[in-house]
Image (cartoon, rainbow, N blue to C red; front, side, top):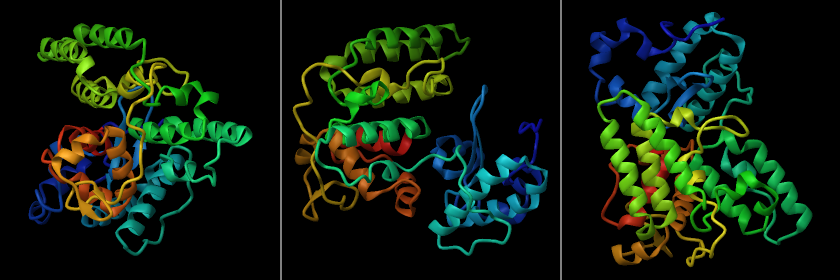
Amino acid sequence: MFKVAGAIIDCYDDPKFMVNFEAHKYLGKELLPPEDLDKLADNQFALKITGSGPTVRRYPVYNQWITKVSCAYFLDKKDGLPAEMIKAASYGLVNACKRYQLGIPTGLEAEKVGSITTSLNKVASYPAIKADDELAKALAKKAEAVLYKMTPVDRVLLANELHKVAATQYSEALSEYVVDGYNPNLAKEIQSRLILIKSASDQNTAYLASAVERLLADKDTMHPLEFATALSDIDKQAGLKDRYKKGAGGGIKDAFSATLGGKGAKDKDVPMEHGSPVNGAPAEAGEPVTKEASEKMTVLEHLTSLSKTYPRNSGEFVKAASWPVPTEYGKTYTSAWKAYFKS
């Protein structure tokens, strides 16, 4: 059985590369310091390995330069890798080369494998606006098949698009991500987190437990998506994201399904179509909006706008994800930005 621990797979595994004088010229520029890798989203790596332990990510593709380096390491090391890892990494590297308009090196295969995250657009691109019953059922079935290959934020976006055509009524899993008030079992989900946090022998235990309790106390002053984004931040700090369950398996619910899916009154602000962000802010008809107007938009509206303007796996997403979290357009926009780019 292949063991990732201790193996030299990419440049960050290779101590000779990391102390190389030529490589050091790029450190802090094209080459991120190793300690910054944990801040990157999964789609900034060509290979993601999941299992019973922590998720392992290799072959970074966060810019054009590092993609070239990752391709070189992969082609050098691939003969020692298992077949499934070769297929998954090769597919991710091919996509990155296309994104940065690089030539695809000989030896990279473009065959897609099941472990690769499925694009939101491939599921939500059905020619359906009418609430046709059979079509809604088909949409729900198709979405469920790929739901847990997506990030929790993409699940929210997908579920709320399908909710518009009444498809979520046919899927309990999808309905957990609908922005429809708070999950009535939220207190139980919070209690599960507190038990896990308090059982850890960590110097931040008291701080993290207090943060969760304060967040729950402030629940009624927050939009559910703002709450879910804040809870996701705490989960990340507490190392709980590796305990998220996928599908029918064990574990805790991710921050968004733990928070959302309430059966109470509909969110008073129905999601609407928006223009592209201008200078980082949402816009109507190509014009930047004021902070006051931005704050009147819901987190879901901002999320929808961001997903259309910065599609995942695009160069625009990679660039925007490296920017500092914007705060000048109000709390709802900041919450949406953190959820989309940092969760």
